[in-house]
Length: 324
Image (cartoon, rainbow, N blue to C red; front, side, top):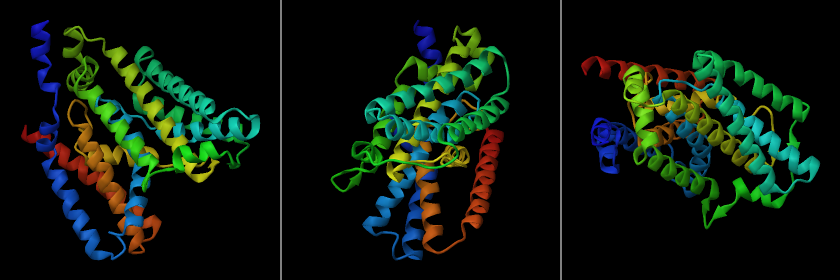
């Protein structure tokens, strides 16, 4: 037992270690923050900062789940579709069938977990590549969203549901509170549990992890459930804020989540990176998007910028691995 604990001790990361590991991207975020405040007089305003927080929240929830997936060496392209399905399912249940908001939210979360389990099952039991599986389920789940809504937005006037994602705790958006709670829970799960050590070990060396007695299939299966659950919650929060369920929401969310993970130092090959890094990555991506909007950069140009950032982050990761 002690040997196993020693073997996987390096996968256990405390908060101070996270700060040291992510010192580079943390410094990059500080520099970006200063630059943004210089380029736009509106950037530091309270209202704008709260808007940045709300924008970051949905991406962060998806990115936290994506972090677990990428750490095992996988990928999940269906997170945006999970957002769409959960948001549409919740609003349809509340607006059309008068289901209580809390029950509708729980059912949508269960749906997210079940579809995440489907991803995990196909990947682990049918031995199919995660990229292909989640690419297929991305279309399947998005199609279900269009089917249940008839391809149109579902407006909702339920006050309780509107407060779930659009409410405030004092002057802080409630969605930002969800983000920090989710971060703390996922951080503990990743850094203070056997499951978290198994996640790192599986991505670091799948064969070695199996020889060490780790049920890698179970680990991979669970991370896809976790990704589906967090993405579904992100969709519910966003739909609540928009007062409607829309089958088009979440388009491109998978790319934003992946970009945030990679910018935050999560290795694309798995086994390396921290959840704190992902959080900083989300803040960097959110700040860049906000700054580009403030200075009037076209949304199509912003897609180009995000693509360049992803390529640069992957390149840096590749260079770092070559030096190791």
